[in-house]
Length: 553
Image 1: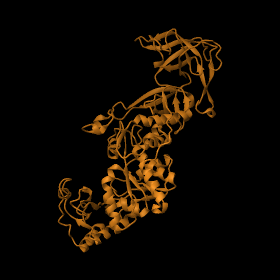
Image 2: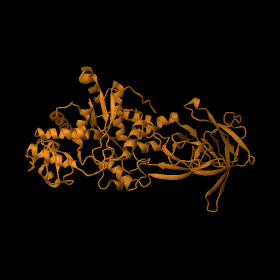
Image 3: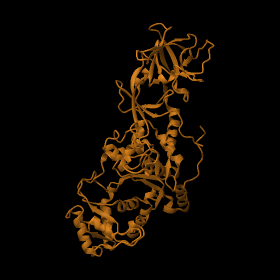
Image 4: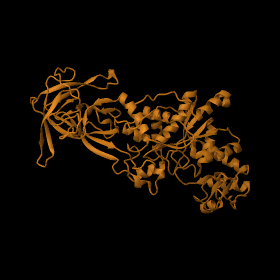
């Protein structure tokens, strides 16, 4: 694998920031924000935005606010607020201020009345269907609502009545009065307030009208003094409206910039679709290790460093593209290789009986905990008369250049002895029951005096001391690389074999494993204890395999 740490050039957002700082714009001040809506769990796409916004603040000595865009009480919950804060901290970032759009409901209400007073907003009563019809098409101008020319006094009176709960949900909305012939459909008198009789997770029942995203977002940026409001490309068309509100309200002119969102192969980034997978039990909750959620990746064993390094590597672009998920796995593997304790686990066992070893004899063997970290030390694993090896490490009729175990052939057991297969014992149905082998007594690793050279080295566990463990092996959640190119229901492409559960045998030391520990099961991959892990029931998730699926040039 080639060296991947390279000095990268500035991305276009960094160039803008550096230019603004050098020119003295905003008095040389930098303040960004990360503004998630608390209606679901964060995913790897949000991680890219987190790394960008917090990274800018870290690089240029600024700050980043964590602001929850909680303007829709129907879909939002404190569970999501807590999970978002946990994810941001887990990635290694700290926010300057924790804010909520709901902090500004009083101020936003005043802003709305200011627009009404200036003749730039009105209460509309037409149906949603009629509103859509009158809005026109991208190629044809819209038509004004019959309520567009209400007087300022009437609009103020009705809007106050909306806030007081005098009208039914859906009966009235407040719209900005802009331009029904604009080429930007969002500028054709957008809705800025709607009636919702729902309990808000922070304000309770104080309000029954709530601002729309476009009315809350830019003004919240302005109130906080955000200098660089960075969002993804789908908000490009919103920028004109963002600027219009700030100009007409005559408030601090925050500036919006857009970058390409992250799209990964074999997965989805739609929070709505992720919620559907969770609610319909296609996965086991928001932290299912097959999901691209940060909590799912954490449970699977991905590290904060690997995610941050991945986000830095893919960079910030102006065009959407599809990133191979194998690149993310590369960074996970790179980090885990340096930090994971090496242990032996047999996932598909076949028993081996060492016939020339006395019954009850135990031979301690010394193995390294991590060759990448000398200070991690060594551990003792007992070699006994009966052991397990992987079924794939034995072949009765091997091809040429097969260097593992086969009849009459020798192989070295990792950290232990050279053994030779003498007999294959089978069950009545012809399947292999066990292998009878002999070991070369003076061939112990670290003190080998046998003079015998073997090319194959395999891992093993003691059949009498090893512990049973449940191993959860994950594959891609979807069977196709790019779901955006597929027709029909996205759930039709779910990989029904995305989770495989096997019973394995592991070193007895793993009984003491803790959540957050990381292990390399030799020759099998990287694994972590699952949240279901207990000392009585050992459960491990496979994080990623040892094989490199992506080459970084």
